[in-house]
Amino acid sequence: MTISSCDSAAGAEAELVDRFREYYLATDHEAVRELERRTLGVAYGGNGYTDVHQAERLVSLLGLGEGDRVLELGSGAGWPGLYIAQESGAMVVLSDVPWEGVSWGRRHARAEGLPADAVACLGAEIPFKDRSFDGVTHSDVLC
Ligand SMILES: C[S@@+](CC[C@H](N)C(=O)[O-])C[C@H]1O[C@@H](n2cnc3c(N)ncnc32)[C@H](O)[C@@H]1O
Image (cartoon, rainbow, N blue to C red; front, side, top):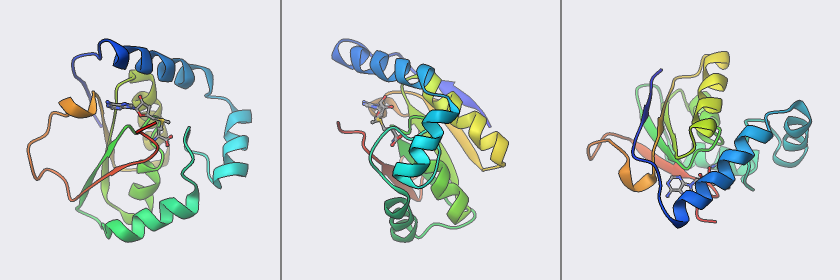
């Protein structure tokens, strides 16, 4: 798995990124994982409202399988992108601006043997050609 990095965010986006960076640095604790399990049903470092039932619905709607590639925009630590990879067999590319989020996702993917790549990048600057993916997902990003 590789991680590439794009230009950093500026202005209002930079403030947003700093806020999320602090979150990813401060919440990699078992107590937070337990809270996630109790509220979302699983623990992937999620920091939105998407629960495991909604993630299952995404897996079903996307209809992905082995050999497919899915891009997750604003993945944070990889929820629900890593879950989609695990359940479908597709390879996921996690993308978010704070390095701290996607690198957490990378560690998780390595530990679980999940097919994943990661890029630290604004959604508008994603460095992939058209038709590089079989599906694109984002959860709780426009907030
Ligand atoms: C509430 S978090 C949700 C993260 C993850 N999807 C989850 O459910 O745990 C929103 C994420 O969107 C990212 N984000 C916001 N604007 C973005 C942009 N323009 N490009 C890429 N990521 C962005 C933030 O950095 C943050 O990690």
